[in-house]
Length: 101
Image 1 (tube, one colour):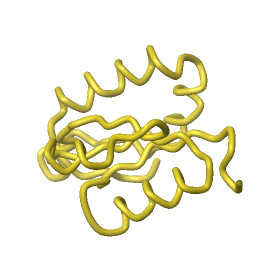
Image 2 (tube, rainbow, N blue to C red):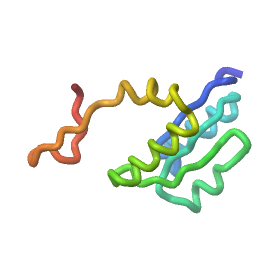
Image 3 (cartoon, rainbow, N blue to C red):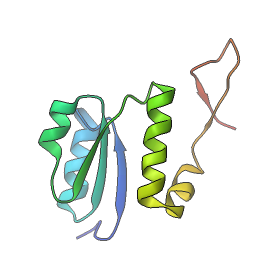
Image 4 (spheres, helix red, strand yellow):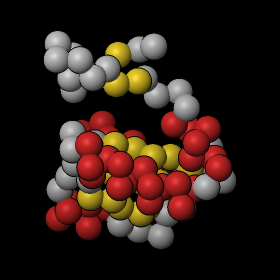
């Protein structure tokens, strides 16, 4: 099993590539946190190796709550995972846009 012992956090898990990624990763032995907005679709993905999280990542509050829940679950490794993410610029011209540092 290619992903045995590995954990993936997959956003956009309720359709398309995100859903296919969740299924493939779990089929290959990995554990998955499937993230999306559609609770009814996430419920169909829930399995022994797939835990679902209904989150609207365009909402700053929901994203913050989600990251806090992840930190409790993943602990220190969560911080290493998120350390590569781009930073958000909060200027009137770029609010809501993610930019690389």
